[in-house]
Image 1 (cartoon, one colour):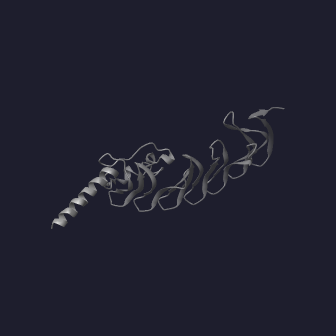
Image 2 (cartoon, one colour):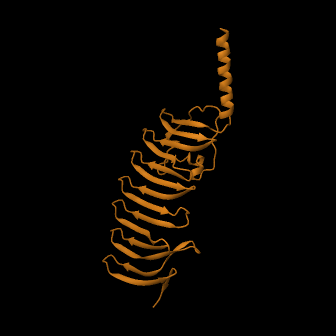
Amino acid sequence: MKKIIILLIFILITQVSFGQFFGQIPVPVKYNEANVVDPEYGITMYEKLSFYTGGDSVRNDKKGYACQGWVEDLYETGTAVHKGFYEDGHLKVYKNFYSNGTIERSFKLVDFKRCNLQLFYSDGKLKSDITYFDGSPQIWTDYYQNGQIEYAEENSKSMEYLIMRKSYAEDGKPQEIFEMTDPKKKIYSKKEYYESGKIKAEGPMKYSAANIDYQKEGIWKEYDESGIASQHKWVNGAEVKD
């Protein structure tokens, strides 16, 4: 009997010490779905807890300690809305879920500088795929629900200039294509399109570090919807008149 009492005291002391050092093991918080899921942006309330994607907040437990380890939040129905691993109150890895159980977003670290965030539609189809470098979105792709790419962008690791930027209509027709053709001189090709998919304008552009902007440079062609073209010359973002 004496050994059992000593064992119980040891367990109690261990639990108290663990709680003081790591914070109280969190009890799942329950949320109403209408207060959690935004029809357009999804479940965004945890973004502020991830420093890797620009968040600046810390999550504490009921005793005021910074959350440590795995934390799970639930809908009022009992299904999971959030499962995340916390370190000093900051999210390191997490997944959010729709009330039907399908994943809403998934965040993970890739290495010391890069992390990846994926967002999903309620039917499980990929909505966005974003790779961050040093806290800024370096590679970003958005998808329509039919799987077609809606928008794609890639920046240099320094986040100083674009590598490419493309947008498409839901049926796959291009809307704008902007991509680097000369990395050393920071020269780009840009094409704009009508809703029909026909070319509207095209020409070269260059990146101006002084103005932190992209300027038309060289011969640009503009088309009407019948395909007839007119040409214009540009220098440093200004049209040159004949």
